[in-house]
Image (cartoon, rainbow, N blue to C red):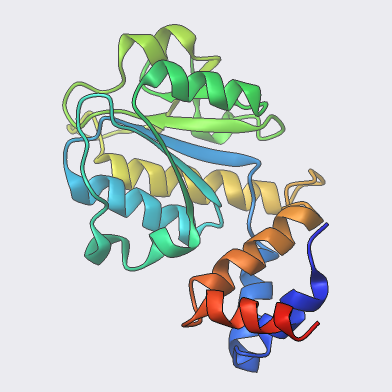
Length: 218
């Protein structure tokens, strides 16, 4: 059980505005949807996807670095990686296995014979949206394991969008529908409290010393 008295003590080190901001943002966070990027080469694309996840309330991002392994571009993500949980995997196989164990269906964002237009996507199932490399797209492994295929209708000469743009369009659409639905999409009470602790730790200086002082006074 989380120590709620410790949480209250730690929050006393935050301004009232910051405490209220944390609670307001967490009230809109969800794990009903998540995103996975597969060996994205351009660093700013992964960083921009993380930023979009933060903007639209997606709490977790899954990053597969089977071929390309790079640090997150702090400037592009603009601090979003501080508030969004990053799950990193060395293989696509391990990423998919972990997501399935958490109850997610695998959604390949790629044109396909059996694809679904974004407007028709069923938001009821927990879903992870996979985005692939800039030129090659998703690996055959993701395409073979995908439960469904999703596309953004396009009507111009250009046949594809930058992955960060695609992610932003898809996330804006599905999260907007989700918040208007009767689906229980919010974080659980336990997850809510856990993130309050986590965000406080990332915000206040000397966190460990403050916790030690609190425990010594008990």
